[in-house]
Image 1 (cartoon, rainbow, N blue to C red):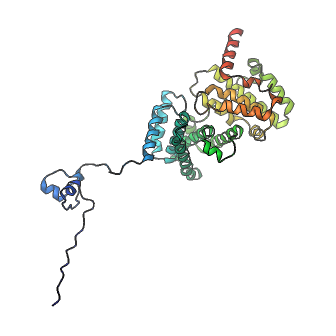
Image 2: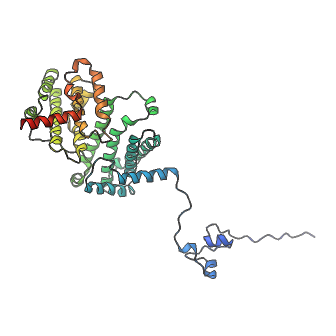
Image 3: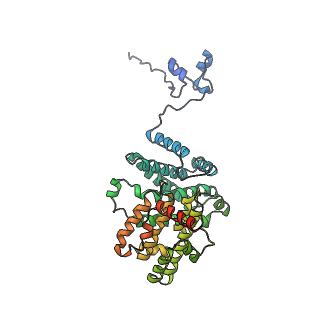
Amino acid sequence: MATTIKKRKAHRKSREGCVQCKERHAKCNEVHPQCLQCKRANILCSFSSPSLSITPLNEDSLVDLELLDHWHRHSVTGFLSETTMHLQHDLVRLGFSHHYLLNSILSLTALQLYSQDQSQSKWYTRAVAHNQAAITRARPHLHSLDQTQHRALLGFSAFASMYTVAEPPLRTAHVRSLQAQFDPIEELLRALQFSRSTTVFVRQNFSPLIISESWLLAKPGGNRGEGLQDLEIRFPQLAPLRECIERWCEGGQRAACLHAVEELFSRITKLLDNSEDSESAKVIWGWGIEVDQIFLDMCWARHAMALVILAHFTVLMSFVKKFWCMRIWPGALLGHIRQVLGDEWEDALKWASISSSGWQHWYRGRRLAAA
């Protein structure tokens, strides 16, 4: 006679049971907000109270939290008034809905931390990763514009432009060994071209209201009431520079170089007359956005006269030489241009070669003596 083997009655295992039932090894019926076992025992059920996930924060999450803390406690984008500081904090909240904006904020913050201590290569690695993520995530929104994205895209454009300025001089030795030798002229022109493109994009696609409210865009030009002749009275070194332009340039190139020089010294005048301008970095960077494309093309072609004018841009940049994004640029750019041009153009570069602090003290002293 065959023996009948009784099968054990199958039952559904409780995999999402409450904490109390798991501790008592009891079967939980997983009823919310209080399971049957806890109700019978008249005890508090974990289903009826909120609980945190037991999944630990990973290393990247902790690093990003540290970056956000640094962004809120320090002025990553330059000296800001109390009003603009609040706006900067608001962009973080906006970034939680538009992740490409948050990525651009984190990339810029990581880059600033790396500029403070370049032995901490983790910050450079994090900056590059967030910058790449920001561009990848923003690209679809740039192709298919939606009004709800305008403020986030405006912030992304500004922070991405700032990143293109700050990153090249900070590249690690390992990264530079994989690329061509660092060329300050080429890198600066790339950064200017990126800023010009994003500015054109914003002006063509965003409402005037959003543009007018923004503190992120580069500031307009200097004291427009002063023409080139008026500027020559304030800056004697401008006359020989203009004579060089007349001698070495013709037609459209001459007009582009004269405009670049007038725009440059107009902005120098503006900063000298408003030394406490909290947004001086935007006044400075706006020069590269306002100059004629012909002038930038001449710089790309290493036209000697254009490079002489570009060397004078380092005087303007020196107004914010303590700002981490610009700190390395004046010396690196001027030194490279002097190497490219050689001794033949040393006299034309003499004024630009004077240290920024010494020159500003000299200029203010000259004005006081004249008064």
